[in-house]
Length: 307
Image (tube, rainbow, N blue to C red; front, side, top):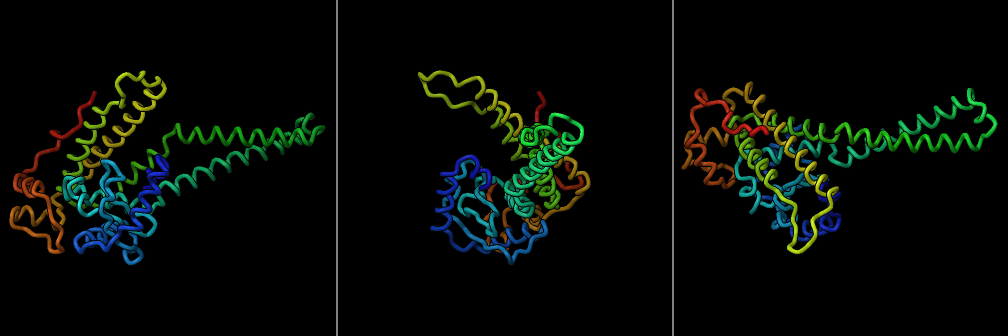
């Protein structure tokens, strides 16, 4: 929802109105899963309100329709499992939202970077004023001019620092760390495999994505095309980093399985989740096809192709 606010505020407010009007209590199965995710990242589950929001997916595009935002855990129960495509990916999406909620999301990032750049600019302005009044004759003779020059230095340094933070990709690094923390909280090799399979599909869809263009209309400006390609490349790099993290985590995860995947391996077709969560038929089929953990092959077959 943070991203939706910055991409399209009108759509964000429509979603907020939809949530306020049509929310209902979350079912026992999804509430149990959400509570586990919240506890896994160190948050207190009793401080959250758990809502099922029907048709929330209509406002979020292809994103898995769930979020943890402002003390509320919101899920579109009808669409969330089919759009996640697997139980493991659903767990990962919940854990990612929980980690983002604990870290403060986009709001804390903007707050910290804004104050950091302002602090750097202020230090530069006062530093120039102090140095200039002592060492520069012109600034000693023109007190008002020296203040104006220091103010200009403050603004210039602030803008440069802001652009430097963007160029360094601190936001991307923060997102990678959040995803890594969510992955380490899974503690299940089958969930990790589900995440890798979903991520590989996302990378393929991103690389095949084209700029929408209507017939008879002129081609989009080159600057827009460059920004579009840069955005796609950045998303692909982030997803490929996630896949590399999964491979590293699986090395020390050993034969760890969550309760659901353990029971699915024991009885793929007959197992029923005790809290009423309805599993996908594809989850059961994958569980039946998976080899024993001791003989599981490396995941090179789902490694993304390198250009």
